[in-house]
Every structure is written in structure tokens, then in C-alpha cells.
Image 1 (cartoon, rainbow, N blue to C red):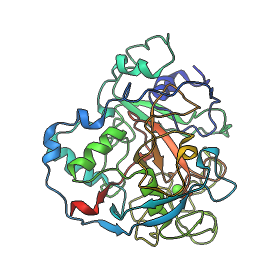
Image 2: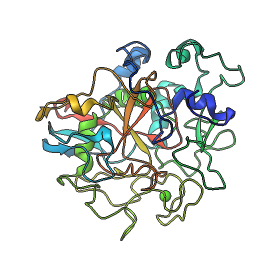
Image 3: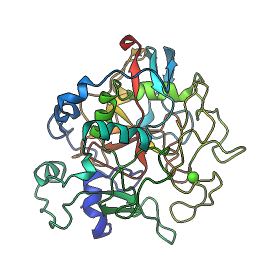
Image 4: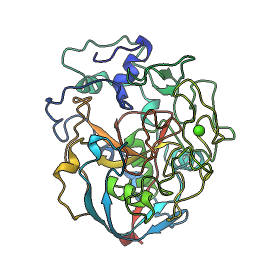
Length: 369
Ligand SMILES: [Ca+2]
């Protein structure tokens, strides 16, 4: 184990971790995870019935006009993986105006019988491929259907000392977001969470859509602005009118609730950006289609058209675990921790990870009309 952490969350973290802004130092010399080696493709696992779902109308989506923009970090909060700044051209596409809600995900599950990753017992043979060689098999009591639930400490902690605020909770999943005993009553319009990347891919395919590329996501989040820090411009998230669902106060033990929400919030609770997109900053992280590679931007040619991301994953903080990009930040973000609500801020998570602050939205190609 690279990180010192509570035994109870150790394996949950191993399955997933990646919220790790500054959590554990990693070895940058590790080899990249070979392409197609460990993470099963979502499309390989999705039964064919999903592919035959009726194409949804563009209801609930907005047309994002194509164009060019300068991708990546705009202020001194930008991290190394956000550079260099480079010109990107993106073709027009449709994008969901909101994060996929519990009600929408229920419609998908009701129609297909789909079972999410968090609802299945982990497969040790697959899991150990993402762990350092020789890692012993955990106790069977840990290898259970579970997901990571935010569990704030009642005292200040070193946010760079490891993500100690996550609990591996048996029975936590999209239907029981806080674990057994919790439900979705009065949360139909909240973003679905505890969905792994492959769950998000399956939903989008069923809906006749797809996950956005990282470039599409950032282009859309900027809402036509140029080199601004947030979807609304440059005013700090904690200044002026409430702009997004983030964490106000001292993370992770004190939340003033200035924005009205301790945890996630109903979609469309805050003003949209200029493209009409809600919650592109804060609320829940959103899966993108791309693999995450900390060095990817260094390999991209200026003026690249519709980049699809790297062919392999590489996270120097966690080099054995292939990861996908997440964007937009969550209700747990604040400037002292991750500032994930910046339009350029990149995050990553392993494909099989479910978390109580991660969801998604879909896009669709114009050509699919
Ligand atoms: Ca909040």
C-alpha cells in the first residue's frame, strides 16, 4: 500500500481511488498500462439489446456549435496535467443540458435490467491486475458489492495526506446512495451517482448517445468564453452570487452550506452557462470517454481536430490502474482542495469505480439526427 489509510476503506480505495488530488506521491517512472490489457470495454460487456434502443429525440439536449478554443489551464491553480495550452477544434454536437438523473437512470434500468458495477461482487482476478504484484487477496468480507461513500471526519485533516473521507460501504449503489436504508425518495431529480464508467457508457448507448470526449466537455463548459477560469467567467466561485454546488468552509469537516447544499443538489439548481448547460461546475464529477494520461496534452498537436484522448492510461500517482477522465468537480470541491469546478481542471478515476460524487451526462453527434 502506498498510502496509509483506514483498513476499512483500504480495499475500496484500491478498487477505485483516484480522487487523489495530492493524496499519495507516486512513481513517475512506471510503465504505462498496456492498451486493452486490464479494463474490459464497456461495449464488450453490454448486451446487444442496448444497441437496439430507440434513438432518443434531442429532448433535454442543446446544440453545441462547432468551433476552436484554447484548451487547458487558465490560472495559477492549474495543475501540471493541464499544460501546455493548445488549440483544439471541435465539431458541433448535442449535449445533455443536465447531469443524468436518478429518474432517467431508473428508466434505463427498468427497460434493460442493467446491473451496475457497484451492485456486483468484485472479481479478484480482475481486481488484482490493478494492484502491485504480490498484493495478497483481501478477506472475503471485503470482496462484496459496495461503493465509496463520503464520510466526513469530525475534525480537520491534512487533505494531502490521503482521502480518509471515503468509506467502502457494502450495499451502497445508485439506488441506495448512502448504503442500506437509504433510497431515492425525493431524489428523482438529483444526478445519479455510484455509476462506474462502463455503467455510464451503457446508459448513453441505450439512450442513443455517447459520453463526451474530454475536449468536447471542456469546450462545452466554457460556453463560448475564451480562456476564462469558470463557466461563468473569472469571478471566484465563493464570491458574489451563488454559482455552483461546491464545498464552502474547511474541507472535509466543515461546510457552511452557503450554496444551500451539503451534498449533491437537484440538477438545474444553479444558473446555466451561455450554452444553456447546467452544473458544468460542481454538483457531481462527470465521466468523459477518454483515457486519462497526465502527459497527454504534451503529445497533442496544436490545432488538433476532435481529439479522442490517449490510447493508453497513465496516472503517475497510481501507475498500475488504468483510468478514465472525469470533469467538472463536485460538491466536495473547494479552492483549498481541488478547484475541480474550473473548466480546465482534470480528474481521473478507474473505470470500475463508483463514488457518491460522480455521475455523467451524454452527448450525441449531429450526424445521428
Ligand atoms: Ca455545496
